[in-house]
Structures are given as structure tokens and as C-alpha cells.
Image (cartoon, rainbow, N blue to C red; front, side):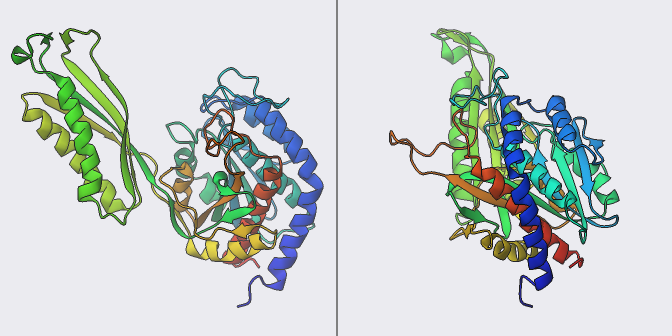
Length: 403
């Protein structure tokens, strides 16, 4: 098969023409959404503004503050996902449309994703006809738990719309401007968390021999956790354990009764995930027991591995090239996580990464990354995100047998 077929190329061309017409409004919407961000779980005003901007299209509530809308014929559909929530970050940009919400900012590009998805939905409703439905999924709580993606995937709403493929797009400053990645296989990791509490015996700091100090036990566990990655996981398989918080003690001269540490586990293979859950529990409990203490371990399983469907990836990348976006030399993969992974349990799914990187800043610092208070993709990213959604839609329509 020669790809894209004439039908696919014609569909993408028509969508592109309509996208071009609505992009100025999409950029204005991006600025408006960026100026008034809402944190995860309280995205009601953001959702309301989007529903207003999509006036005339149906809006089915889902996952508390989220909603799903649809353009095109009844029957099967291709979904596009955009995230509603912002981060608890105080913005440090100087643009006129900077956040006016205290300690809240779209520091992960969700404003760009929403504007790009809106643009494609507006372009699609201008089409004379579509070969398959376009489902706009505006999802809450991507940055926080409980996961909005998991809630929508479990709601049954996508199955009722006969979802045949799901497309996500994410800006990525670690890719240069103009570069795009739609590689197949695992692109984001399974994301789990752990809490370890060590119970010792309190006492005076000058008499440690009649106490059981939990602090050196915690320190030993931290070092042991790093060895689990280096010495029990195949070195060619990505995995990590990061301890992000340690709590113990409140005085210079008091040995506390207990202490705790808290961290994350990231894996790209199911068997490594199972192994590390068991190994962390065993390490903590045995380390504490050997020193006369007791450890409690709690592991919280989060989002699964985000794996791109090979067929969707193969079909989408040539379409992206038609927009002048260059494919990444190697598919972008990271141990970051995204609850878009829950949709891949329902239908073939693809996460496309759109480069927004400019290289190091003028003062020699590294590229400003996601979740940084100065992160601010150019408005050009709205057009690129919309184009990536369009390419994914056309590829999904072909995969569904609609074109």
C-alpha cells in the first residue's frame, strides 16, 4: 500500500485548510486559558470556557469536571485527548497573558493542548463530511491523583462512542523546534509511589546505645534502594527509584521514635514493576529488622506504561512530515508518566511529542523544561499540536477502515 492514499491525503489537506482559518482564534483561546488556570480537581471554570468556545457541539460530563464532545457521523470514532489542569507553580514569565491565579500555572503545555484540540474540532465541524466521528476528550486531573484518565477510561463513555483509536499530543522542550516524535512501543513509564515508615525506640542523642535510631536505618534503606536498580534490573531496561522526601526528628539531641521516606518507582516492563515492588518491601523490612526496628511499607500503583501502537505510529509519521515537521532521529522516550496510558487499554493509542525546545538560555542555563515557572512554548506550538491531532485522526480513520 502506498501511504498516504489519495483519500487520506485529501482528508488531511481539507482539515489543514480549515485549521489554518481557525488558528488565530485558537491562539487567543490559548492566551485566555493560560491567563486563568485551574488546578487538578477544580477545573470547572476551564471546562466551562471550553464548552462556551465549542458552542453548538454536545458536551457530555465525565470524571467530575471533564467532558466529551463529538463531531461527525454516528458510529465509530477517533478520540483526541486534551488536559484541563494546571500545576501548583507560581509563573515567572513577563507575557501580558501570564497567569492571574495565585500559585497556578500551565507549566506543562496543557493550555497549548486544549487550544490545539479545540482548533481541530472547529476545523472538523466546518468540513462538508467526515469519514468517522471525531471525539474531543477534555480530561481533568492529569497531574494529580486520582487519575482523570483512569476515571474516563473506566466510565464506559468511550466504548459507547465506539472508540477505534485515541490520539494524544504533548509539547516537549527536550525536542528541538520543528521536530516531532511518534515512535512505537513504550514512550512513558509506569508510575508508582512508595512510603516507608521505620519504627525505632526514642531516646537521648547522647545515649544511642539504649535507643534504636530510625535515621541511620532510613539512610541505609535509601542507599539500598539505589542498588536495587543497579544490581537487580537488566541494565538495558530503563527503571528508576527516586527518594523525594525524608522525614525524621525535630530536635538536635533527640532520637525520634520513627521516621519515614517517600519516593517514586518508574519502570517500562511489567515484570520489573512487580520485582521492584517486592524488592523494596523486602529491603526495608529486613534492613529494619536486622537493627531491632520495624518497617512498614506502602506501595501505591499508579499509571501503567504508555505504549504507542505500532500501526498508528507507522501511519501518522508520514502525515506529520507533510506539515514540514521533522521526525526525531530516535523516538522520544522518557521515564516520565502520563495517564493517557489508560486509554491504550481500550483502543490503539498514540502519543505524539511536538518539539518546542530552543536550546540553552542566553545565560547558558539548560533548556527550560516542563513544570518550570518560566516554561512558555511559542504560540506556533498551537498550530503544530493541532496538526499532530489532525494527522493522528486521519491515521486512526484509516486504521478503523473508514478511509
